[in-house]
Amino acid sequence: MSDEHWRDDGAYAYQHELTLAGVAWEFLRRNADYQADYAAAASRRAPGIAPVEAAPDPGWGLSCFADPSQSANQLPIFWRPQVNPRTLVLTAASPIDEGALCFDPAAWPGRLEQSIAADGVHLLLRFGAEEHRLWAPEPPRPGQPLVVAQPLDADLAIRADAADRFLRRLRKPAAAPARPQRPTLVRRMILTLRALDGRNAGVSQRRIAEVLLRVRCASPREWEDCSGRALTARLLRAGAALRGGGYLDLLRRGGDR
Image (cartoon, rainbow, N blue to C red; front, top):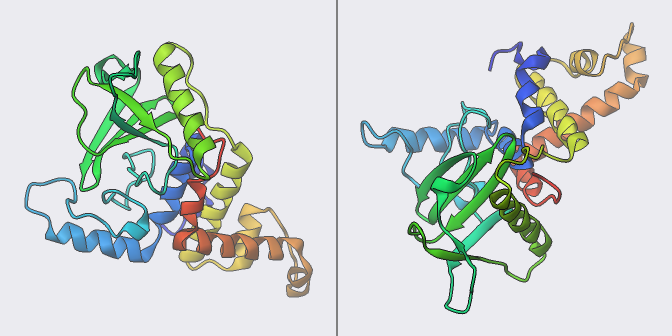
């Protein structure tokens, strides 16, 4: 990113259409330690092999490496099902599961992307700004009846909502795509990302406040008493915390699409 990137409203416009899983990636890809891990894995890959095959540290929350130079609207991000409860866990149906969903991705609406990682097979179905994430320990066979595993844990409500949305999409493939929810949260996250990018570019806290919050302080004394000073400081602290690992908490926020 250029030093002036953070000032450009248009450069962040795509983020308004992201799910919280996409916003989480935007923070992770700004993490210098993750960038170093990716570069090290990329240097070890075999010539001519596009994806980075080495499994990332589980602490990052990813099932496979993603290029930190690419934004969330440029490449699919495959999160481990353990950290993203909106990922549906697919298992083989039993004989008593009458009417179980058959694996037939050719008939599904939208664009399907797949990753075969060390922990299993990840599927990402994109329909406009709408996302559906699925995971199976082994590649499902075409036509194979499947069920969704629903662990009885604190994330059950999120998983149940994700399963309901996926089933409704398959039943009504022509319905308009759902837009990501939580627009207020996403707007705040975008503001936080821009503040973080400004600080990384070496810009002062006062200048960040002037550009992003439209505050005007004629003197150092006015800046000391300005409410924008405290808000900018909070944005920077929040950005550092989200980049450092707090992005994983976004994956467990309910109501995302």
